Structure formats: C-alpha cells, structure tokens
Image (tube, rainbow, N blue to C red; front, side, top):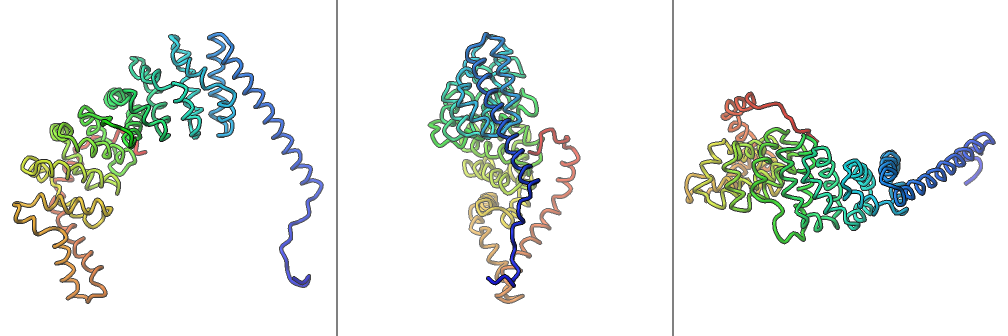
Length: 387
C-alpha cells in the first residue's frame, strides 16, 4: 500500500501512557500477591486453628470469595479449604455449621469444579441432616446449597440417592418464599438426572406444587419448573389422583395452558393429556368443566410443536364420543386450508388458514371471558417471585 493512501495506524505510546500502564500492572501484581498470601493464611487458620479460629476463617473466606472472580474460588480450593469446611458441617456448634455452609455455598457459585469437589468431599450427608433441622435459617441455607450443587451433572446421582428430595418437598410447604423457590429449582435439577432408578418425587409433592403454581406468574421461569415437575408426577396413578384431589389442581393447569410461557404451556398440557389418556371417562368432564377448550385451541396455533401435538390429541379425547374423535384438529386445519385456498389462492392459503383458526380461537376465548375475568378477580396477589 502506498504512503499516499490513507492508513489506520496505532498512535505511538507516549511516556505518560506507558508509565500509567506499567503502574496499573504493578498494582494488579501487588494485589494478586497480597490476595495469594491472604488465601494461604486463611487456609492455614482453617486447617490448624481451634474452633473459633475456624469459624472466623470460614467467615473471612466467604467475604473474600463473594466479591472475587472464579479464579479466586479455584485458588481457595487448591489451598485445601473444601475438606475442612465440609468437616465443619458436622460440628454440633451451629455457628460453625452456618459459617462453613456460607463459605462452601460461595465457593460453589459459578465454579463447576468446586461444586463437584464439594460433593466428593462428602458434603451431601451433612447437608441432608441440616434439612431436617427446626432451625429455618440453616435449613434454607442447606436448600440453597443443594440447589447450587445439583446444577452440576456429576453431582445429581449422589444427591438424588441421598434422601434429600422428600425433605425438599417439605420446604415447598414450610419454607419462606425464597426457600420454596430454591426447593422447586433443586427438585427440577434432580428430576433431569438420567441415572435415577426410581422417581425422586411422590404424590405428596403435588399439593404444594399446585399451590405455588396458583400464586406465581404462569409465564415465569418458576412456573416452568413447577409444571415440569407436575407433568412428571402426572405419569403415575398416585400423582394423577393427587392432582385431581388438590384444590383447583386441574383448573391451575388449565390456567397455565391459557397464560403460560411456551415451556410451561407444554408441560401443563402434557399433564392434562396424561390425565385424560389414563382414564378418559374419569378426567374428560373434569377438564372440560374448567374451560380448557379455548386455551387448547390457541395452543394448536401458538404453542411449541410438542405442545401443538399434545393439544390436538387432548382435544380429540375431549370430544363427545369416540366416533367424533375422527374429526381431529388436523382435519379442522385442513378444512380451514381448503377454505383459504378457494378464497385467496394457494399462495396465501397457509397464512389465511392460520388467521381463520386464530379468529375461531379468539371467539372461543371471548365466550369464556366472563368466567376468566371472575376467576382473575378472585385470585390473590402473586407471592412467588417471577424469576
């Protein structure tokens, strides 16, 4: 390239900018050196100190880690703090348990290796024991720890086999709002463990899950996890009976089909379909009575591909007689498509058919609007965070 052509050149470093960069590097190096000394001092205090020294060290580790990077968490683990912190979980001293639990929780956040190392060091059995305590503060910290640790796939089989799940189900009814959110998320994490030889949930989880789903926003991440668990529970006879027997159980699932996110509507319609497929005679009228048709019709248009198929199948099961099941939703869509082709031509048929079906869904929704508005007016304010 000729010098007469314009070029983008890096401006030459001035003595001022060079000195500033050097000073910044020196400060960073000094700080890293000081932090490394602090890590070694705290680990030594934790390993060799008396009980009070261990408690102070655990608290200091938490303070340092919560404001630091993933690299700092790894350095603490390399310094050998995880095993003594796990041992402290077994202490009869509640202050020692709380300090070590908070330190371990902060070491595990955003650090997959630390999560695995904490479980390998034997943290799960004492955490399960903490879930049994009457001390609500420690119990909910243990719930948060199990939630964090269960996010790592290698930990799921160990936690699932530990007996933690029934205790987490108790938190669904007895815990604070944050405790219940953490318990649902932890149970959801464990439910995805492919190594589970037996279900981690039993029908006792249904009623508190339904109550939580009633209270939360149906499009929230929390609702997605709650409906996923309810869909799993709907696959057993005990779970189906519990959904049916829970106050507003079927209605809550219908509301989620109407108002939920793509994920929660998919799980909710899956649960309803599981009910109806298990015993059409028993569940058909119960589902129809709660006004499920408008939401299901809309789901055949707006849901995920899985939700659309489930909605069509459920609509077939909800028809008056087995003979009428032959007029499936796919046939209805074909009729709409044929009408659209004659009206607007083949090029615009798909778009027109979808609009016609959406209009039909809208009219069905309007027919049930009084019921929906009455139900909304009687609802209590949401108590569960939308996250």
